[in-house]
Image (cartoon, rainbow, N blue to C red; front, side, top):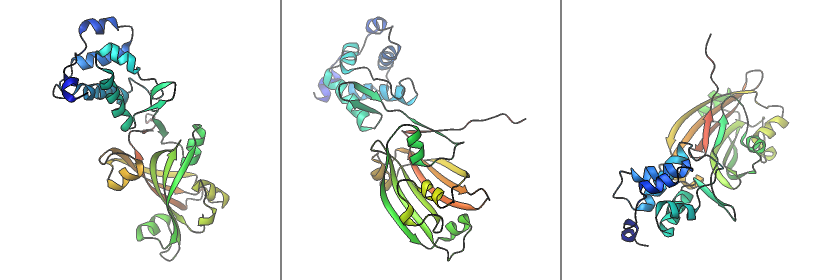
Length: 270
């Protein structure tokens, strides 16, 4: 269907909204379509925008089924092609996924507590998800001045650099660039989990300081994470320490903003 025929379809009327009052999500979809100010956009873009807004603010939660194509066609009066294009737009943005024979579902956000020190592998295991990595670099070399300062080592002491794209259930979620002293985790001991290698050598960190700021994906980040250039991401820097206070790890990461929520528990100061 062309953009013109898409434009010729009828928008939902008040009668339709009233008839669907028992379905609050569908009712909100129709009300937002009625009050949409973007009259110059095709209907599929308007519908995609409304669904995207509901997902981003949590009205449609992770793991929840999206209204079916048939339900959306019946409720909105849009053609099946228009509705399908709107859903495909959300699929391409990574906001929803299709399960064969089950329907279309909102992808769950990953709630990442800031009070727990966990590696990616262990974090995915406790969520019941299969983790994997794409290795970008695993090498030994001398530290930069900044790395030597943060790890508390001499400029002549070698470090291991480990750069990977981290995936859960085959989906890229983050890029991690870790640096540790060579004595703590020789390259041949590092397999799926850097923290497991540190544990095996007796150098498991017990606490960390993590800084985080919002950013937008550059060309390389967008390519590695499978997202659009300019998409929201989180940049983090983790500085980890042993029980005796000695620095043991510096990791710079980039995580997808559409898949991660970082959560901190706050207590009032007495």
